[in-house]
Amino acid sequence: MKLSDLNNPRRKFLRQSGTLLGAAMLTQSCAGKLLAANGKGKTIKVNGHLWVYASKFPPNWDCTPNLETVFADFSYAGIDGVELMESTLRYDDSVSRINGYINKHKVPVSGSSYGVGFNMWDASQHTKIMDDIKIVVPRLGQVKGKIFGISVGEAKRLKTPAELDAQARILKQIIAVCDDNGIEANLHNHTYEVENGMHDLKGTMERIPGIKLGPDLNWLIRGGVNPVDFIKTYGKQIVYLHIRDQYADGNWTEYVGQGVTNFSDIAKALKAQLFNGNAAIELAFPNGFTPANPLKEDWKMSRQYVKRTFGW
View (cartoon, rainbow, N blue to C red):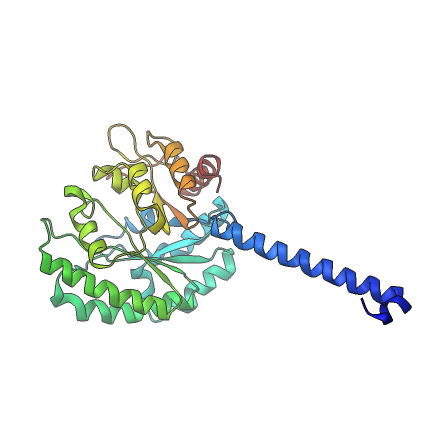
């Protein structure tokens, strides 16, 4: 203590108070970092993938004509963000139009899936793919999307080591472009990546150790993989996931929560792995199916179920 403090009690009080406040702020900062490290300091966003709208527009699955409806429905249902498909980003006016929808409906773009019509295992397609990536990814960044779920393309047979090498090469290039644009890339699976003992997915992971994963839980089930086992094995690499439900006969449900998928155990497995990524509900209807509800109500009920079951 300084002599001046003895002569000025107010100064002494202020010095001590400042020390205590600084200590408190440091403690709060450390606690915040600890919570973040344990996956507890982040709000997990529950987005929606627009496939159920895009499925009406074969063969390119481009739902641009209905894209504003997607934003309006998600706003009504309390969905946190729109996961686009790359087809919606290929128009010259994509950025201005999508930003207009974001501002009007107050729903952000979470990111985009990618890979329809491309085979990344085919080296002859790499130039065409990268030319497209250099258009799509920067535009996704301009609408503030942060997630990029990549599908690698099906060969309808086991891919050869050389094809898996080619697949890994272009994935590394795509990931680099995403990194340059502030976007987190992940591997998004369908059934073909996880069938046959996960030959395809494991082949990629062997060539790109630590690659981030964005599994579709329903495609895992349809590919013969238990989602709980997958989460326990690869949980530390999972940054994103898709949620869809099905009945016992394998048909997709109208909304999440109608079917037999054991989401309760899936939620427990994610919690045990301290999952702190984000998720997307993805509705899909069987061919010829007519929904009983307006689509926005199916989204709302799905969102409410995810909140009850996962706590997000």
